[in-house]
Image 1 (spheres, chains in turn orange, red):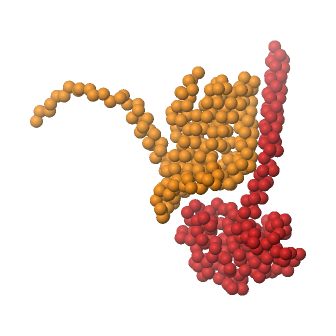
Image 2 (cartoon, rainbow over the protein chains, first blue to last red):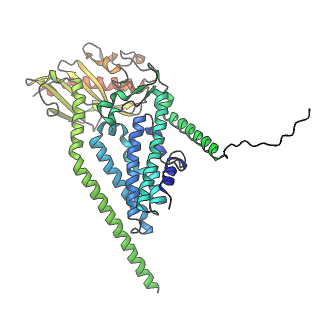
Image 3 (cartoon, chains in turn orange, green):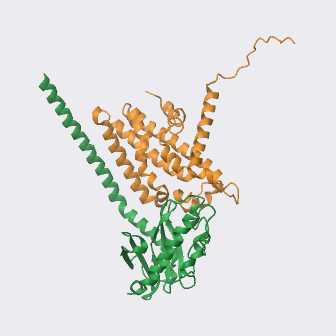
Length: 227
Length: 211
């Protein structure tokens, strides 16, 4: 069994669902136009992942191999519907913005992916942590991409924060540049693809740096060139 | 031996079916339970949201009736698209009609239909127009939103009597209303829908203001 830190590291970095597994791209690209939209969908997805992983893990010995996938789909669909109703009731305006992407969490492949690849083979605690880690990793991806696109596209950060944190959060909006004209490409879908590509490239560069042995000062025998 | 195997597989099939059925029931139970806890709150949210939009167009000071209670529903009117049911909210002060708010949909937006609220004073003058829901391009067509630009306010005070119907177009088409840089389709669709609503009001004024 993996240690919990290992699971967390997996979800956040090594096997990040958005940047490494490239799962759930449809909601990732569509909703990451502002930080708050990304955060909202990220939290809803994380909740779904924790619950679905936990339940799948609990029932993993009682469901035959032939019907496990339909059962997983049933569980995930029920959870998402319940979350959709709850958001509709308590975060109505955010719900209006995220709209179709809440029910579409059902089709986020990373959820059934984790149910099948992890939760159906591991104990409850580890599965719940795995769901949490994968969810937070996905949320981080949404928020990072959202921040990038919002800052470039509209020159703000945390706009519409009141939709999630209530009226007091109206002042949370940061205007990076006042009277910013806006850079439309960043907000439109192509901006999402380009942004995602850049982030993945950056992550690969960091991974490569980390993999290289720590730099040590090694004296190499130098043979002076003869002129 | 063969029959034994078949019997076994039959049993495991039935068992699998039962398990699947059981989970369907649990799923239905979970969703129904959540629904029963939330549906009142959701209905309330929708009501408040609608009321907030209506009040923005016809402020409370102008009427004393419950906007959501005094409505007319019309359907199958050509101006609003066949098969669409349109709700008309009526604002009254001391039983006297002050204004109507119609809910037409502009079917020909750049990205699907644009749902509008159109408030008309009794004399046929526009009190205001709002886009309630749309999927227009962010940064271009979404200038119909009040928090993006002041464009929808250009309807205020207009009526069929102070602007001839042939000028109810965007400027590019020889009309009176601005288009947006890079987005003509969106304002064109909105102007058209507002014009149709006004024309419908003029033609059916007697029935709409009655009662």
